[in-house]
Structure formats: structure tokens, C-alpha cells
Length: 366
Image (cartoon, rainbow, N blue to C red; front, side, top):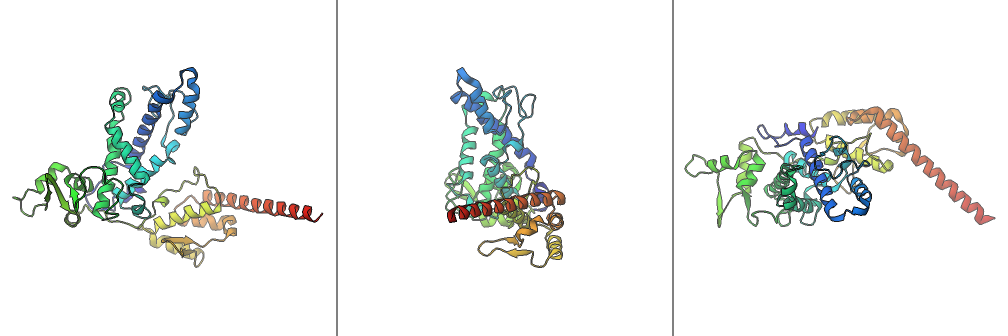
């Protein structure tokens, strides 16, 4: 669904990579970093312990081929997939930056990307890797540089969007990189936001052309004011507008996600609802939910976004939860069974607490 949203954002803009490519790059770079640790922490007298630790970091159990540079992810003997890494900070940050950069998903994003945030550290790691001698040497065995550069471009595009939209102007996650400290964007940043080449933009900025792209100078550097960039992107059909979409609701994997309790499930369903209400399906979703029960969709008291007005017993109502699943574009039967399972656990825990308290009171009286 994320990749489908790109087609809704501007007539000519096309993200340079699809989500599956981003994820494969995350796998490639994660394996590179795990193998780098081999040359620092491995213990020749007991290599197995070290390789088990590496596998644990990657979310794997099989250590075969762990440090063999000829064995690549999903290759023979190394079944490393994105599912193993999807809950790592690295993967979560890259997905967040991708959706902000190319889809304009702002909800809960802009104010979590300052100089002390996880995106700041991840971008610094990627820049270091792009200049790494270790990467240069390992490239002949296990290529990873293209993946590193592609992920860096995602970071740079997200940074350019923050400047364009004037989000946290004084403290953005990648303000340390490149030429900053001015009221505009560089030619490279405009290229990243527009999907056009820097050479094409420089040609369009030639003052001898009719209606040239307006540029300004700061020392030896050239930049374009944010207002001029936005106006130009809109005129070319390449501007991706910001959307109040909860990115956490883009994908809810009922089969694989580990839901701790009913509150956790409720939070994920509310994120899913918030996401859908920011798409073209908003009207249908609202109508379907209203048909199930009046007031089922509410508004959070102290936060932005909708809430689901569900009672504890509602989660044990398999028919109701299946219909909610259908309205939220989730597998109905999977949701009804997952909700019923968590509801049964909650009831069992409540009875266990009640039993323990009764035993304590009985012993106290005797």
C-alpha cells in the first residue's frame, strides 16, 4: 500500500526506489555491520560463541555462512530476510525516513528527527560507511556500497523535505551534513525532491533562459529559497504534499507481530484507523465503522488522531472484531482470533490476580 501511495503524490514524481528495494538495502548493510564486528570481537578459541551472538543481533538462529563473504542474504546457508530485522532501530528509522521523504507522511515524524534522534545517528553511520576503508576492501567480496548510497539518499531527501517544509529549522537530524545555515535548498536537495538530475536543474537555472529557476548565492554555494522551490515543484507537478497520516498504521501484521496485551492491539488498530482516514478510503472506512456501532470512532482527549471506543468484552466478540477487521482492511478472521486470544489472556490474568488476592486475604484472617 505504501508504494501505491506514491502514485497519489504528484503527476510526475517517482521515488528512486520502491519499499522492497529499501528493505533489501537494509538487510545488506545490516549484514555488513555484523560481519565487521567479526574482526573486532571474535575469539579464535571459541568462534561459535561469537557467531551465535552475531546471529542473535540479526534475529537469526542459524550461524552457517555468517562470516563467509561469498554467502549473501537469502543465499544458500544464510537465510537472512528483512523479517529478521524489521523491528531493529535501523529498519524502523529507514522506513520512517522513506515515508516522510517520498510520501509526505508527517504524523509523529517531524518532531522526532532532531540532532539527538535515532535518524541523526543512523544517518551519521551511513555517511561513515560511505567513506569506510573496510567497505572499500569488502566490496570485492560482498558489494554493499550501492545499498549504503541509496539509504544515504533517502536520509538526504528527508532532510531536504524538512528544510522545504520548515520543520524544526534550527535543529534537524542531518543539519550537520553538507551546506546548511541558509534560507533555502541546494541544487542537489532540489534534485532529490523533484526526481530530476542536478545537471537538468542547473540548465533550468541558467539566467539566459525564459522563466529560469531562481537561484541565490552564498559564497561559492548556490541555493534556492524554500518558497521558490515549493512553487516550482507545484508548477511541475512534482510536489508531494504533507499528510497527517500515522505511518505506524501502514502495515499491521496480525500473523507476525507480537502483541503484548489488549492495549497494545488497541494502539495498533488506532494507528491503522488513523492511516486509513488519511487516504482516499476515509469515507468508506468511516461509514463501515458507523454502521457497526455509533460512536465507535472517537477522538483522543489529549492527543491528535482518532481512537476506537471499544470495551474490553468487545475484543472477545469474534463477529464484531471480524467486521472491524474488514472495515480496517485487515484479515477479518485473523483479527477476530487474535483479539479473542488476547481477551482470554486478560480474563485469565484477572482471575489469577483475584485468586491470589483471595488467598492472601484468607491467610491473613486465619
